Length: 253
Image 1 (cartoon, rainbow, N blue to C red):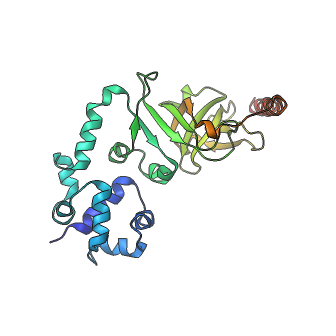
Image 2: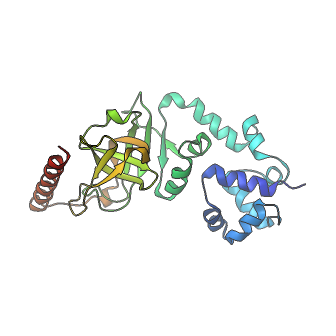
């Protein structure tokens, strides 16, 4: 009996993809993914070949084996990749969350199997911490350009948050955002998120909605992404930001 449908479901969830996202990658309709996973239809050979190449599995593994058990037993590419990362743990591997994986990350940030499948890199100047890198888009944190990579250290306790410092905030309602964070002296269950670009207004979120908080340590961006700022424009932006922060602090106190 073919296990292809169950294996497709396992592999999709491993990556944190919705059926719609998986279908798009396989160039088929979402309804077909549902049919395959519920074993109402057998996956076409061309679909299986794409999946096999995507996850570095053989067609025999997809059709005949339970890849979840094979992974646990160490008999597959998935397990070998996980083992390689475990062997390299002392090198302070930094898992990278690109924009295209943001939706999957929100659903699976606590899933070690999903995290293990993220690409990793190392930076020799960062040691002794729990680090992660997030790709950001948009202009709310200019002059940090859209497309930059924010390398962060995990904050385990909200009490350790430092005012006016930049953080990656992972929340259930707002998703993954890069902002400066201000603690609220009046309401302990609120955090105020502030953009560096003064065109964007600060807003508040409930601390109970925060799933993860990562303190920004480094920004990586391409030279072609970096903008040139004349002194007048830069001074105007700084003055606007200072005025905005000053007003915000008065409201909080």
